[in-house]
Amino acid sequence: MVQSRPAFSFAAVTKGVMTAALAAVLAACASAGGLYGAIPGDNRPHAGVDRARSMPIQGIDVARYQENVDFHTARRHGIHFVFMKATEGKDYIDPNFRRNWERARDAGMPRGAYHFMTWCSLASEQAAWFVANVPADFSALPPVLDLEWNNHSSCKNKPSRADALEKIRVMLEAMERHTGKLPIIYTDMNFHRDVLAGEYFPNSFWLRSTAAEPHERYHNRTWTFWQYTQTGVVPGVRGEVDRNVFYGGQNEWLTFLSTGCDPRAIAALAPTGRCQPAK
Image (cartoon, rainbow, N blue to C red):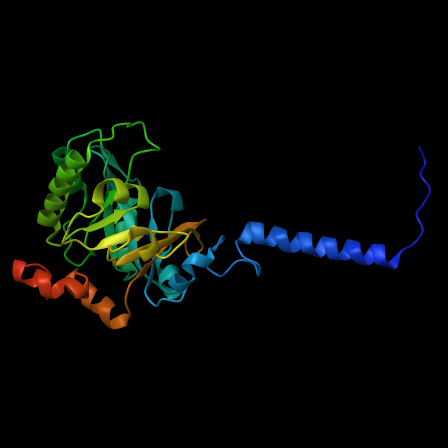
């Protein structure tokens, strides 16, 4: 069927242009996370974590998914530290861990190793695996115990709160004995709510919160590190990467590097023999 050609209408053309422009803006919002496009360093920035992007001590965490990280380049572009996956459960080591460990050291970037806790093997077995595979390097950042529910693994066990806390303390004690530094606890909102909320730990906390500031999601839990996006972009890192921030400024950061402890906790922890400055 041949349709007749409609008469020219300036109003119709104007409406069409405006509609197309609005569609382009909406598409940019959907893909970049904000009205004005992507904020540098994040493919999908969320306004709820804007403060993190302006804080001075920025870092990343990496695993095998980031493949060959160029730590020299990342450091030149403002990355101050890296946490890297080392071990998981009782028998898994990240295939890039040893390479990342050496390359970050060679680049002069402070680095720490993390262990992903699973709930299908004994804490003693996991501790032995961590000790066997992670160097006891006193120049490194404190080790990290990653505490989450194993929702994306074949392990479907979900221990009681009491059982989980017992396993956590066994693991934390073993990691501290091995490295000489008080481990950091990394966790997300679900695991914190179910197990850690209201529980005292002397350890520093590294909290995941990608849509709001940590105090809005974790109530009174003091944080030392904040993981604020999983869609970060950093020169030297292939693809997207988790971005993190340290709570304080340069002076606090230097104290943390020297002692392995959150400066706000040193007065309370020093009498226990912890937080001794590096010599």
